[in-house]
Image (tube, rainbow, N blue to C red; front, side):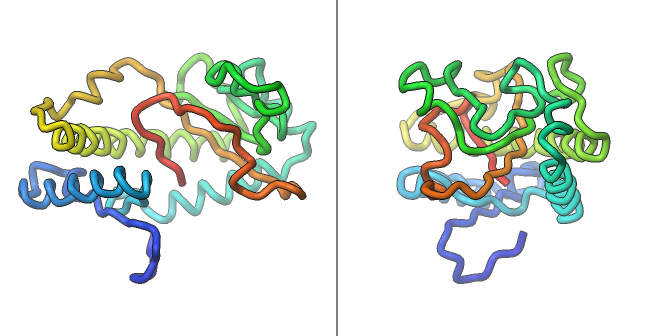
Amino acid sequence: IELPDNHPYPVIDISSWMDPSESSEEDKQHIVSQVLKEARTNGSFNIVGHGIKDDLFDRLYSSAAKFFAMSIEEKLQFSSSNNLAGYVANRNESVASVLNTGTPKEQKDLRETFSMSYPPNYDGNVQGPHDFYDVLSEYIEQLQPITKAVKEICTAALGSAKGIDLPTSYLQDLEAGSTGLLRAARYPSTPGFDDATKLVPHSDFGSKSLTL
């Protein structure tokens, strides 16, 4: 994804950590310093140098748009009783399992979603339309080395911030065996709500959250 040079949002190139054996310690430490700075200020940042091709992003966008353009009756065929698997209609997503406070009204996100857990062949997953499900499966597989690199960077940043030595695999080991979650979401026009109020306050499941 190409961004203009004057783009105000912080952008960090993580390519040195995608293949650390081919990168200098100085290059890797520079990325750690950038991540630590943004974690202390903006709280989030864009990453580039992850290696995912634009073609995959294009197919991901187009297949998701095609899926969400289907009628509600068609989309509900790919739903389940689990809000973390398959399709969930707009205003039907509850975060009660994560956030145990607030009224039922406050626990409904203003979006519709389709969720897949990693690995893609996980028994709890709901099979969506083939073109949509296949590209989601491909994307979540390609996210795995990026997730590993981000965890290693954040481990190094945490160790630097605390002044302690942590093994590179600290966060990776801490979350060993956990299930990753990929969620495609559509936020329909909702009069009276701006983008900042379409999601209820919540905690994510792991140490990092990657958003496309």
